[in-house]
Length: 332
Image (cartoon, rainbow, N blue to C red; front, side, top):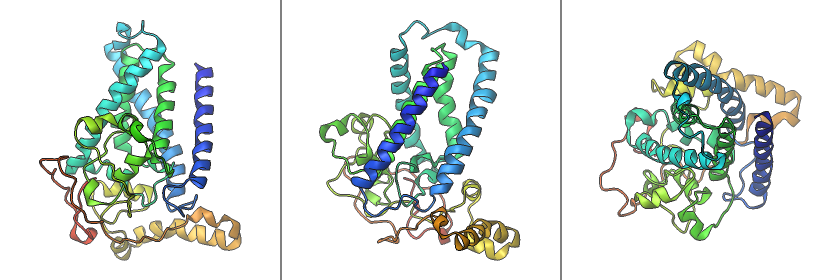
């Protein structure tokens, strides 16, 4: 088991190195800096701190008590299957669930709030997929890993499945100019998923697949034009701070306005910037710690006609304060 974890970790780190290299030489969107805006929030708080903390919560405080109480793993439902069959079974079934839950999040004003952080990045790259609301991760990874344990799967399935998830998540968000041809009808990649993150009206309700693109083609939500998006991110203002992003999902607020009203928030909100400014003024080589903003050619949602045949009824948009909506705040 430990050897499997070492191997999967090595595969993941090697894959990160490969993707970062390909992003430099074959960029989908040219000119994106490596240390782009929000890089350290995504790497430190979302990828390292949140992932570690939620792993403990999901496995030790949710799945383990369920198994101890109900003893489902003693049923050994999938125990006799070859490991590769177990992995394939859980990859396909979980991906089917993710498609429908993801689609539901985009159509539900309430559950959209657990997903909007994932769409808040204006620069999408290999690390952008790590930005996900803590509650969204708890829901999805509990539903992902609970069946693996409760149905008596081989313990190796967990690290293998986790590695596949991480590798695929990096792949579909990477800033690589990929032309996969007919393969995009089956295997999902950046061609379709980068459009899913675009702030374009025609793709607000499209490209929900994660690993297998055929879910979108099968259920009429695929969108793959012959041109690239011009704008990414949300159609309304969104906090840049990790903790503020989670608070924003519960209570909408304007960061600038709140900083003017509250001295406590003003002190907290500007603390990181002040510390980094002092540090980088003394050591200019550390300036990438602040992240590099990327000039945007469009300041609002790119208007377009929704692709015909994809949706018969438009899902209800989530409520958002008027001062936060430069355009209609539709979930995407």
